[in-house]
Image (cartoon, rainbow, N blue to C red; front, side, top):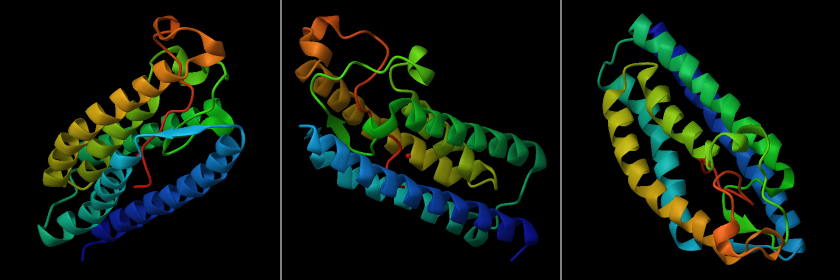
Length: 197
């Protein structure tokens, strides 16, 4: 195994550890939300998200080694910068939402929409992070099959996920406002990248 593959496996391992930290934060935040009357939406698609994100990390670890993918400096360093930026965006989302952040779709009725941080700019910024990371992390070591497959499958899953979140916001808008008054940016409790975001 080449040095670049070994170093890449360390990177993938660090991302896996980061995912475990996300899950711990999500569990703690779920307790907080449920204790305040929070309701979970989209429970049915959550296992598919877990499998997809876990498969991303496994495939990232396997493809460069099994298929002999090279480290291409221009692609690799650019992809690494994008993957790190995606992590930064993800944790900006976590900070902006505080205890309302979760990997599940949990809405606490009556809480105002979060419109600060990255939610000033886009309604679902965590999914921007997921999309960027899902393409960039594999491409750090030229795992283009993983990048393409994850991107395609994630697009299908995000269609379901975003609809679920938007329906949750419409069902329990902040401060009793009618659904049509839910602003185009901000969220009550988005679910991010999942245990694997």
